[in-house]
Image 1 (cartoon, rainbow, N blue to C red):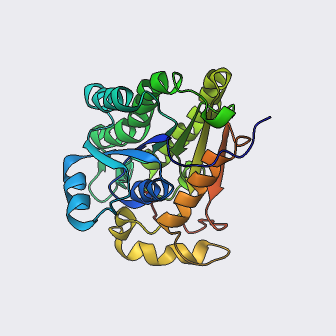
Image 2 (cartoon, rainbow, N blue to C red):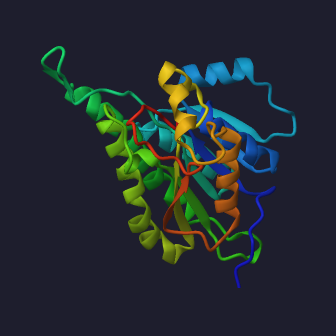
Image 3 (cartoon, rainbow, N blue to C red):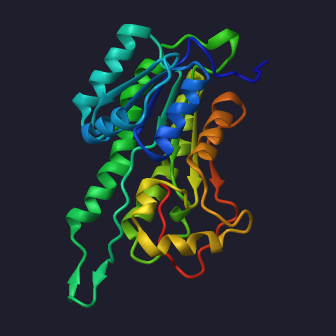
Length: 271
């Protein structure tokens, strides 16, 4: 019978977008629990995290520069994990971008650039799927931990915008709906191997990308039921921890938004 699978020493995790926001909080949470963590992000982001975050010596944490849309770069990191540890227990895909654009700029009589729309999908959807398809080969080789039936867990990041998107967020909202749409078919495909797939759909979170949204950020807390504030990355990381540890959570998208509703169509991001 499956039991609660405690995160701990001897397990290996890969976190994308691990140098800031939700990804960085997840990296720290896993490292605190003695998990070996490989975190990938773009070079500038990794340089920043090394400059401003001093890792405690007990953390078994390894940052690697990789673009989630690049097969060769992601494969290199996964092969490093295979060579050093011969297992991958957890994959958490936090890498994503948030670039609000109206579908049509009425003041300029100009439609949104297809390059802008495609760039959002390239990172949020294709990047997420690229890492999953490359990582699951190592995950299927992983020996279940402590006799538990779980061989591995994949956690993706959707958004409340998947079905309650603000104006000017067509690309972002559609991309996050696509991420949520991956969950059930992948869970069905990987389930016979003992691999679970779960997505989290956060509401507005206090992260660097949301901070750059400016005055629109002030409206977000007014739309939550309770507590009326932005979510904290550390709270997101605890949801990830819950998913990784509880073997009966599978094939679902978990809303994580304090009852957020967006009646005014105000802007937000959860990355």
